Every structure is written in C-alpha cells, then in structure tokens.
Length: 351
Image (cartoon, rainbow, N blue to C red):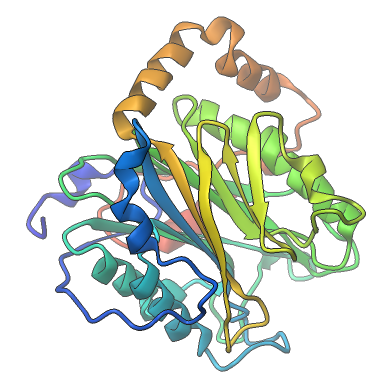
C-alpha cells in the first residue's frame, strides 16, 4: 500500500497517513473493568450484517494551561491504550494540533498493520483574541479524530466541522465540533462542550445532533451510520439531562459522568468499559458497537436516496434553507490532499 498513489484514493481528507507498520507487543490492559476489543472482534460473526466497531474517547487535558495537564504524558498513555484495545476510531478532546503525530497515529497504524490511517483536527476559537485558541506550546487547541480504513478498501475520507452558534459568554473558549466520513462506511464525530454552563452545553449538544450532523449528511452525499463521542459536560440524570439531546432513533451510552457515545439506531452497543488514566482528569471511555457492514450501508444509502423526497434528504434541505441556522454552523470544505496538511483544514473552519 505504501506505493499507492494516495491522492487517487483520498477525497476531502483533513489529514492522512498511509503506511505499513510491523506487529508490536500488546501491553497489558490498564483496568480490569475494560473489555479487550480484540476479544470482542473475534465474536463478530454472531450478528449477521453487523460488524464490531470500537470507539475510544479520551480527554487528553493537554493544553498546557489546565490544572490536569501532566507534561504531555497523556499522549503515550493513550497510545498504549490504542495498541492494547485496537479501536477503530479514537476521539480526542483538549488536544493540541500536533498531538496525533506524537505517537497516536503511529499507535493506530501498529494496531491495524496494512491499513490506511487518517487524522483530523478542528480548533476551538479564542473569543478574546478572535483567533484560533492556542495550547501553551503555541499550537492550535481543539478536538481531533484518528482512525483507520481496512486494507483493500479504496474508500475516501471527507470532513465537516464548525463552531456552535451558542457559546458561554463568560469563557474565552468557543467550542467546536468535527465529523469525519469514511466514504461508504461510517461517520465519526467528536466535540467538547461548554464546561461551566450546563444550559449552554445542552444547547450546543442539541445543535450538533439536530442541525450540524443532518447538514453534514446532506453535504457529504446522504445518510451514513454515525457515531458521536466526546466530553459533553452534561450528565445523564442531571439538570439538564444529556438524554434530552439524544434524537429519536439514536442510542446513547455514558461513563456515568460527562463522556458519552451516541450512535444512530442501526447500531447496537455490545460492551462498554472505563479505563483508568493517570495523566488526565478523565477516565478513557471504550465502547464497542455492532454497526452495519459496508455492503449493508450501501444498500441503505441507495434506499434513502430513492425516497429522499420524503426522507432524510428532504429534512436536510429544510435545515439548509432555515434562516435561523447560524452561519457559524456552515460546513468545512476541504480539497483532496495526499498527506498531512492540517493548516488547510484550519483555514476552512468557519471563523
């Protein structure tokens, strides 16, 4: 795969790495409560037309500013989890722009030797400086996604992201969201919602689930099975209750605190596990889903397209035409690129 013309394979990529990596020893699990993903994958044939899909959500606390910052040690700690549990997607909050290249993308390659890997990043916005929010090291600060594409699949990767129309007026940090589509397979999204204003966090959550994601579907060619993971700073059973921003037909599973995974209703939850972290103030949250296989997804997309006049596409068109939708929710449009060009993504995030 290393000699394949990458620009021919990838469309609308935020950041991509295509390389082979040799097998590496697997470290021991960091917590007995966590379910080893490799073992779950071995039982994947039990559900016809569904395949295991692992999501690992981590808040790195790596800005260099917050009190939970541990000198960058949360990066190798998270890389060890990736090698141990083999997630399909790693979602990252409180991350600096270059953190993926400090061992996390390499860990994904080592977990899936022979597969292509991708990474994407969206910066938060500094409302005081009117510029992207910065980590202490001068890099942009925000949210990220790292994943892989199975060997032999020629799928491209597309990207959408933006900032929320509602922000906490008492904070300098304007929160952002990010979605990546592996074409013909799935969408994965992440966000980090307002920390000290629960009502604002709930409004952001509702905007993401009810407006931003449907618009991203429309902009990227239609519906795709979708998973959202992040530090939402809203709890289940709290006031407000995070369950109130879960759309009808979606499922949600949380870590008992503020990290949650939501998925479209064509998926089911197989297992969940919290993994203790030493170098950040949040446990890692591992969720293994059963998601539609690629051939099932293509059939569903064709069926949705055939009835789009009364289905998801029609709803998306209404949203796009709604003057109440804030301009900040406009989607990122990223040209095809063959390699890691994160600055190009930053220039296209609505600011």
